[in-house]
Length: 472
Ligand code: ARG
Image (tube, rainbow, N blue to C red; front, side):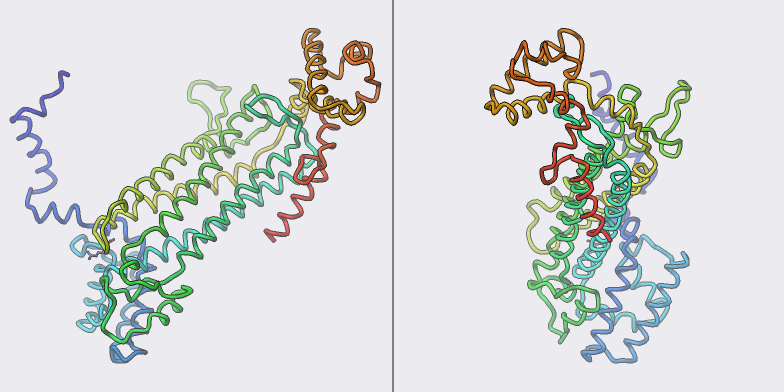
């Protein structure tokens, strides 16, 4: 309540002086400051060159520009590429964005012929094709990174197809599972994630180049030619849609957000499992950090950061959704705001996927601790109930009740179910026999779950074999 000085006229004057330090307050400079995008869209240079080359060749083939002009343009673009590759390309704010920076440089290198490149093209279809190519590449990269992570998980799962751990519901011990089974659950999730990126890629793989500003072109262009040259399945079918739509990026960001959600769950489990209270896994120094004050600490920072990155990635989806919402057709400058969130999201996702694959390869499970925990919390109670159903032909609801009484007795005595004597079992249900003990160990419990997709080591190995083949 005290700090409302900025509302006073005097403070307002000071405020102006403050931004006046950076801008001379000339509208033209402010316009440039808000308009310029080269600072971030320079990341599209390779895509912009690819689009320009495909366009120039098509213009030559169609006789829209003379062959010698086309050749000159292509040679000039090769020189521009050399500069971009070697880091000597002069990026300049006054040319606003990557498209005009490259064209301006081309003109400096080859003269006025450069101006023929923009025949039958607009920055509107140019940016649409560049950005689509970038997002398509990002989807392909992500699929590769997801598969690498799946392979890291498969390696651990194979080594631990029989290692027991508690399976949880509500983070309470539920039924014993194997560590391999648990890891394979993530292999399934990341497999669907990769599928979402593949689907998104297939849908976005249409070429907007040739839509020109919004209405198409009066020149005899061949859009199929440029589409094929750039690896697209076909040209987009409506020129207005071509320059207006960014749902390909929204779809990729949706897939990224779901992937990041899955990563955050695995990250959270790593955080839990590395605590001394769980003591399920150990990470090496490669994926932990120490504390500046507490010498005993080994913190799973990478896992925590992966857990957090979903905020940035989902934030990017939200940002672009809000940018696109309510925009009239066709192109509006609002759409320039599509790039930063998309770049940021894929940067964060890539780092997360690489770090997660590294951490999975790095971790060593403490199988003894996990096996011990697998038997805690009456985790084989369901096995007892199932035994009563199978052996004594009890209705499951009655078996559930009998088992509940057995758990209560064991809990009262401070022992596990398997520690109850036969007499104690028979006091609850006289028909129980010695055979019951065979189902009360975590190993027997896990091994019995042979249904398709179940936790029995044989089933887990079948899952692993299937995925190995899919990823080979
Ligand atoms: N830098 C712009 C963007 O990223 C390129 C398209 C500009 N088109 C225009 N007509 N101003 O969206």
